[in-house]
Amino acid sequence: MFLMNPELVLMISIIIVVSLILKKIDISISLGAGLIIYTIFAVSDLDKIYTALMRTFDLTLFTALTSLIQAMFLADLYRLSGVADKMVRGLICAGHNFAGVSIPAIIGLLPMPGGAYISAVLADPVYKDQMFESEAKTFINYWFRHIWIPIWPLYQNIIIAIGLLGMSVRDILNINWVITFSSILSGLIIFIFIKRFSLKNASQIIEKRDSCDLKGIYHLWPFILIAALNLVMGVYLPLSIFITIIIFIILYRPDKDVILKALKYAFNLSLIMLIFEVFVFGNMIRVSDIASRLSNILSGHAFIATLAVPFVIGFATAAEFAYVALAFPPFIDLFHHNLFYLTLAFLGGYMGVMLSPSHACLVLSAKYYETHIVKPFKYIIPAVILTILLTIGTDLVIRHFII
Image 1 (tube, rainbow, N blue to C red):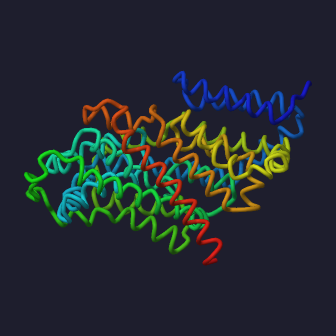
Image 2: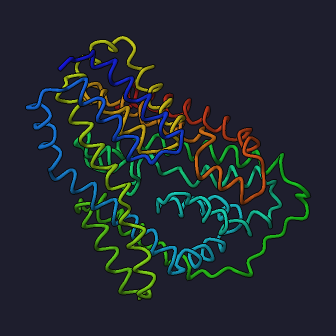
Image 3: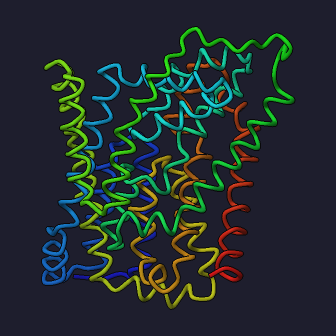
């Protein structure tokens, strides 16, 4: 069969995948189309295809699938059982400034499609008490909801990256903590600006703590337990989540209907297919030897390429897992040669997603707070610029003067 230049086929495949996603075609179908095109025109050889498929069925795929399904199950259990509301009442006790940023941040530890809508509802009373403008509410909820994307093991992009790169969650944390640190700092700088210059009737703000219930802080334990088991003690990620789920069910005794709804939410066929396709695509790229070819081609432009390619894909798809699935496989050799490029790739993809006007969380937040989707960008754009500058600057300082 006629073989085309692998780099050209990869570019065509990515364009097709992104185009289909923008046309609202299911992500698993979109990626499947790109996978088929790449396999036919860049691999073709049946032995290589067989090798790629066999490499897919290993422990990394099992880890990714079981982690994703259990994470989604736990997220929906936490929401449907009312535990999230109790947790919010505990955070309010620390004051409205703390609650305003911590509510979306804590809810962000439970990744779910459109999850910013849930945090928007929970945080709204706090924002109303502080008389924030609608676009300010939207930014605060949207930004702090996503600060954990580069490091938290329950996010789909991290689960996929662990499998593709052959790294542990701890490895990813050691590499990417600077991104989350910079994102939090940037968000807080904009938050302070909002407090000082964008509040209406600031003198009338009164700290209302009628709904405060300090016991609600106890309901943060699932996040602490997962972090302790996996990051501190090194327990296998799926087992860490499973232990947390079992304890959660024992303690809160959710109704049968709640458990069934959460199970239905967790066993999302589209996402399961997506994970499988991501691993097959990654192995097809490996057997076609495009990774080493790209490493040689981009060796003089690696800084720009590893930042820009994930950024463009993240911006176009508004999906955290998409930039990992599409942009990371060709750069794997570069990542292992210099981990700074991996940080840049995560940073680029993350910022691209955050700037995407089609991001479901941004759309839902703006809709709930009744603001035009363009208005929050007066805060989002400066926050993105600050995060990029702080991440690159901090990482370079650490690598050259501390390590």
